[in-house]
Amino acid sequence: MIPRQSMILEAQLAFVRSAQPNLTQRQLAILMCVGWRGPQYVWRLAEELKVTRPVITRAVTSLAQLGFVRRQSVREDRRQCLVAATDEGRAYLERYSASGLFGGA
Image 1 (cartoon, rainbow, N blue to C red):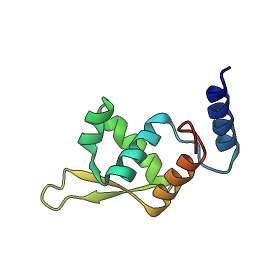
Image 2 (cartoon, rainbow, N blue to C red):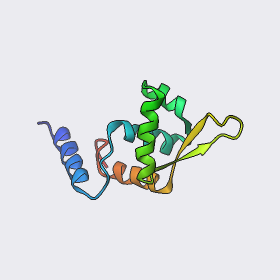
Image 3 (spheres, rainbow, N blue to C red):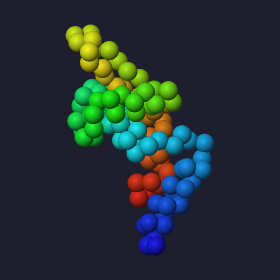
């Protein structure tokens, strides 16, 4: 194992062993999209991740139960839904970023 891989593996193991919720890659990608880019429509997230809207809806439901995102109704079109990160969701991303899982920190 090369040193960079070892460092990333150790950071991942430490994060998984911590009391932090273990998000799926899809959940983490959604949280990053809404946490770093701002609120996103469900259809836009589905398009970005190349999955169906129901797949995004299930992941968003899980993230909402963790308190990491909230849904916002769109007044002009009640069929639409914006997903926004909560303060808790942004704090999770900060801890994840600081953990070294992006190849250093």
